[in-house]
Length: 100
Image 1 (cartoon, rainbow, N blue to C red):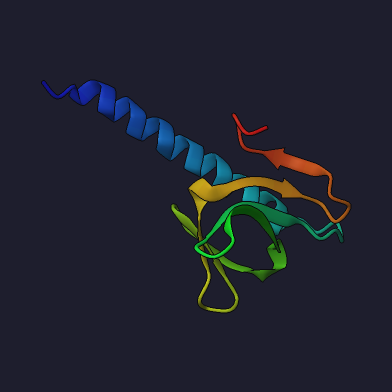
Image 2: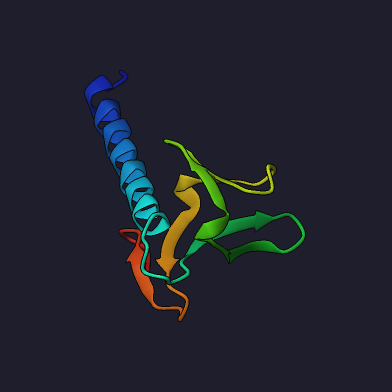
């Protein structure tokens, strides 16, 4: 039998995690301290395989409830693939829970 209440909790948990990622990205995206911040995400390329890539936050034009859109008009990064935000020196300023 399908357990509706268990499924509802999972959906709420995932939505909360996405909103945490979204608020962290917006926090560093609109910060005016002169530093450059980078989003580190899981990039899945058929030729290169799965790897971590980074993109500067100044290239982000829009953050929605499920994805980050870049200024090239073509690249969309789903929020569930974002694992870290780093500053220009490579110091981790935000890390997704459960990610080492």
